[in-house]
Image 1 (spheres, one colour):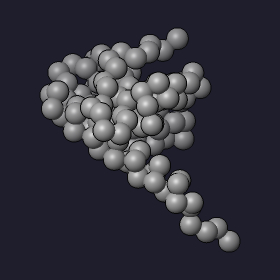
Image 2 (cartoon, rainbow, N blue to C red):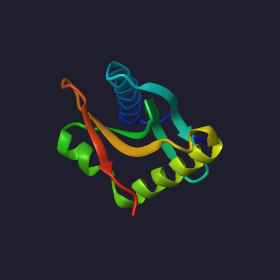
Image 3 (spheres, one colour):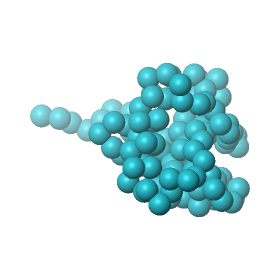
Length: 124
C-alpha cells in the first residue's frame, strides 16, 4: 500500500510547482504568450511552451537551493527528452511549422529573481 510522500519530497514538489508559475509570470512580463504548461507526451515533458512573435520557446524550469545546482540539474538525456517532446508539440500544432524553435532554461532559487537562460542548448 502506497503511503503519502515524505514531507521533504512534498516540499520539493511544491517548490517546483511554484518555480514553474514564477517562470511563466516572468515570461509573460517579457512579452511571451504561454501556449502550454506541463506538456506531457510519451517521449518527454516540457515545463512551459511560450510564444513571442515568430518564436516558440520550449522552457525547462529548474528549482534548486542554489544556481549552480539548478544549472547542473539538466543533463544530456533530459535535453533529448525535451527535444523529442518539442517535436511532438510541433506535430500536434502544424499551423506553427514556420516558427523558429528555441530551448531555454529558467533557474529558480529561493529569495532570488529567476535567471532566464535564452537559447540554453541546441539539438544535435
